[in-house]
Amino acid sequence: MITNIIYIIVAYFLGNIMGGKLLEKIYKEEFTNKGSGNVGARNAGRVLGFRSFIFVLVVDFFKGFLVVIMLKILNANDWVIYSAIILVILGHIKPVIFRFKGGKGVATFFGCMTALSLNLVLVLILCTLVIGIIVKSLTIGFYSSLPLITYLNYVENPKFLILGLFIITVVLLSVVAIKDIEESFDKYFSVKKIKKSVR
Image (tube, rainbow, N blue to C red):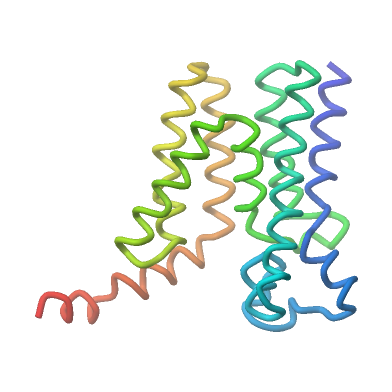
């Protein structure tokens, strides 16, 4: 039991390793003072260019992937793996090392899902792209895909405890991005735009 708790705590602190903060050390410039103000890959790319976007994306993705794949290698219980997923994402969103100012956790979630189930992550990518292309918003595409991924994960692992932990993960991702989701809906589903499309 103590070992499992250690795994989960380590997952949280691995989540504190921010690609954006490493990038700031390299450039010796706080790009979070510009653009959207976020420490994630999209803002890094917007402010510092495509290579910076890729760097932050890879770092944030890999830490999620590493947590899950290592726990699988160590033969950890499912509840430990799913708890660690919550904690590594929480560590990214609210990193104690950086005074609880982190990112949205999307890249880290993709990393976790890739290590957890290749089938799930492929469905997630496909749904995100299809919905995103239709509504012209990847933000809406991603968050609209989460209920389906939650259901498919339950089909792959039909345990109520695991379902509950996965729902916590999805809620965590959604709550921290509520402003982005609202802005995307306002932008793409505003009354004016709907009236224009009808005409």
